[in-house]
Amino acid sequence: MPAGWAAQAGLRAAMQARAGFDGPRTVFEGTHGLYRSFAPSLMPDFAPLTSGLGTERVAADGPFKP
Image (spheres, rainbow, N blue to C red):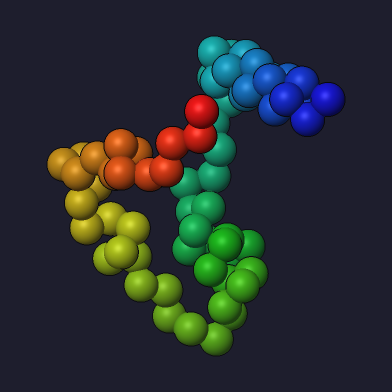
């Protein structure tokens, strides 16, 4: 069942994207973003997220589950 929900969410997202739907541009730093939700008193530091963006690939360094 959990795999079915993940597949449904993926298909729904793909169909919405094809129809032109896009998400918020400020999902991390916005008024209701991730950083304000979990650390509202801190100024967000985006350097760890963006330092190697577009040049560094880290997916291959992750664990492998057969």
